Amino acid sequence: MFDWLRPIGRWLERYVIALPIYYAAPAMILIGALDSSLLSLPEINDYLVVGRCFKQPSAVFYFPMFAAIGSVLGCLLLYTIMRRGGQALLRRRFKRENIERVERAYARYGFLAIAIPALLPPPMPFKIFVATAGTLEYPRWKFLVTVMVARAFRYYVEGILAVFYGRRVLAFMRDNGLVIITICGAAAIVFVLVFALVNRSQLEVADNQPADVHPDGPDDNKS
Image 1 (cartoon, rainbow, N blue to C red):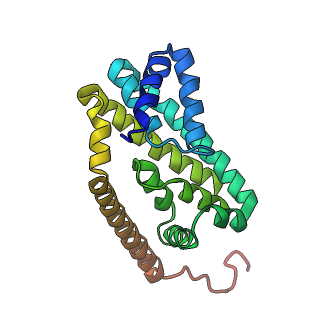
Image 2 (cartoon, one colour):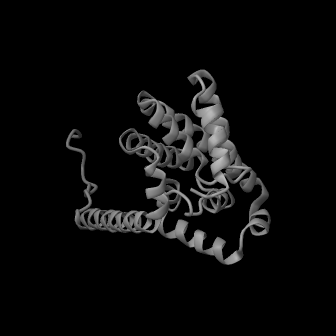
């Protein structure tokens, strides 16, 4: 974990992780929304999910969902702001070469361009993919569903691992981030190749099927 997060982590452990669920749930949603939109709090959501599930194993069934909901709400806010602000706002916040790289990812991989960054922990950049989705006017519901599924999967995996391995989960994700990115990237490439091959075979089958011919002729019912 980043060094500056240690005092914040201790404060969160005392005032958020140990709170009753009717306080912890809205707090988790709010923190997740702020982290995914206006603020940058690396690993905060992951820390809270892991800490809560480690202290209260039964929370693994529901607490990761609060983190995912908060993240989706924050992404929706950033998406909406960038969609209205357009390319000018995007280029004021991010470097041109990074924007062009993300735009090529969307053009080539579609929803995987947002799904993979949403799955991976820091230091994998994420907000630039959200912001670019807004400026490209990527379909809103497709964007939200993709982020929700990816984030929920990530936080539930972290929560389950925290039940068995505790806070070592965060250290593993930090120290092995490159390995995780490589595995997910390879899986994404395999998925894209399979998807392309299936689509190509379906198109070939459709092209080879003879069209139904209905030649004009006399009506059999007429005398």
